[in-house]
Amino acid sequence: MFLFISATLSDGAAAKVISWKVPTTYVDQSEIPANARRTVVTRLYFSLDRVAWTRFATVTGGGASWSGPLPVADGITGYYAVTAAIPPDGAESRMSDALVYPPGGSTADPFDEVTVVVGNFQDTYVAPGDGGNRSSDPLIRTWIGPGRSAGSRGFLKWDLSSLPAGVRISNATMRLYSAAEEAGGGDSTFTVKVAKVAGANPDLERATWASPDNVYSWSGGADGGTGDLAAAESTAAVGKNRGWVVWNVSNMAQEWVEAPGMNFGMALDPDVAATIGSNRDFASREHPDPRLQPELVVTYRQPSRNPMPPGLSVPSPPVAGSPPGPFPDMITASIGGYEDTYVNREPYSDTNYSADPLIRTYTWPANNVANRGFIRWDLSGLPDNITVVNATLWLYFVGEEVGGKDNTYAVSVAKVTGVLPDLGAATWNRYDGLSSWPGGENGGAAAMAPIESSAAIGKMPRWVSWDVTGMVQDWVAGPETNSGMVIDADPHAGAQSNRSFASREYPDLLSRPRLVITYIERPRE
Image (cartoon, rainbow, N blue to C red; front, side):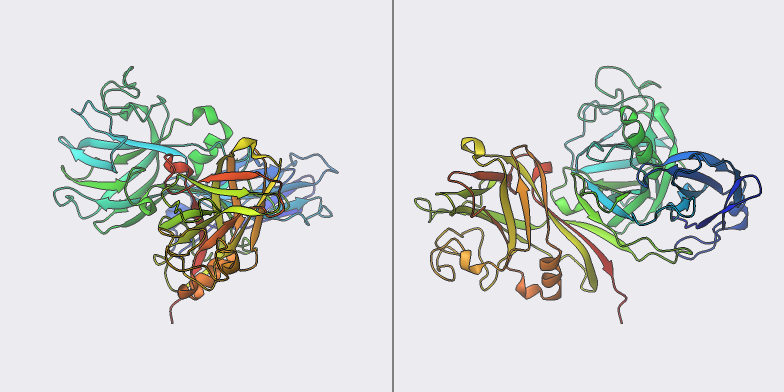
């Protein structure tokens, strides 16, 4: 659970004073026990830009103030903030609102909180007596073996290279879907811990119980990495219902951002206090339902004037003022159910491309759309009582043909209206393989609403994003209007200018299309 903390800064007689109110409740308003409040550790940070934060002091024992010279020199605007942690619980607050000193310093540069769903990762599990590697298994298994020892242990390693260097992470949570148990699962509640891997750098595509890389032994021998784990950072009690389980991993994510070379991944460790045979299995990266695959959701701060970084990023609502109230439940969902295709002018106007690994956008001749893509997302899994805060379409730009021609190529996204295309049969001439598009054989041009979002694309392969909040809000409000979206070629480009994107059929799962929706659930009446 997270805590919230607020702080003030004032001039003392000979030094500056930062004071705060020690939290008394968790974010869910349950009371923090008095003995736990006495262990609160407050960490103080400074920044010159409200983006990169550096810790400069720590107050232990539930203290509520700090006094001393500020780390930013007099006459220079500095920003100051605090977090609070309860070591026995492993819970840490979000960073407080930033304080500015000197008081006349500018506060006009607000920050955005950016939430990134990290999509590039590896996972596996290891088990004693099993000499094989399990990185292709659809499940990450945790099990208690004989003698109340770990009978299987999971590992995940996340690639955080898409995050801007030096960011201050406000929050990082790992989400795994509890998908199964074996032989009844044993204990009705099973505690699973998450710990940083610290003593070895495993290759998860080769790791076994005896070895982190199928070459060398773990530090403690054939122990499945037991001797290479730091202290558990977060724990979760897992019942027998199917559903998402969440662990707070903010500290290890921050450490990995600060020292990428020490990112050896994390272990998913069963609690050896459980009954022998107790177990829980979680959906892995190889699970057939992509909506259930693991997620690492990282929230960090950046100035609002900066563009979003590469990766799956969506802004959160403004952080509550001081004193902060309860945050609404913010859920970021990566939609897994969708279909896609593209359509092509003569001589391919009756060909369907839904099995193609690419979504192609092409201009031929000059100032004429020759290929355009279509995607339709299944939003039926979203609750019916939500307010969509943000929706972002992400496509991976794979490459181009004949050099791509124009150096910059504008690809736009618009809603499909007036017709419900069958993307498994649609062609340039017919929206369902049988009937002509509105307006005739035009590749769906007359079925496009006004452009909602556009992106200028160069020639370097990368993730490209479009803001599609408006259309997703419309689809959530009126599901019957969801006829999909058009990925339209640049109608103003030169002849043969083009860009191609990874489709649902692209061989690299991590490069396929993504629709990332952030929403708040409204109370039901």
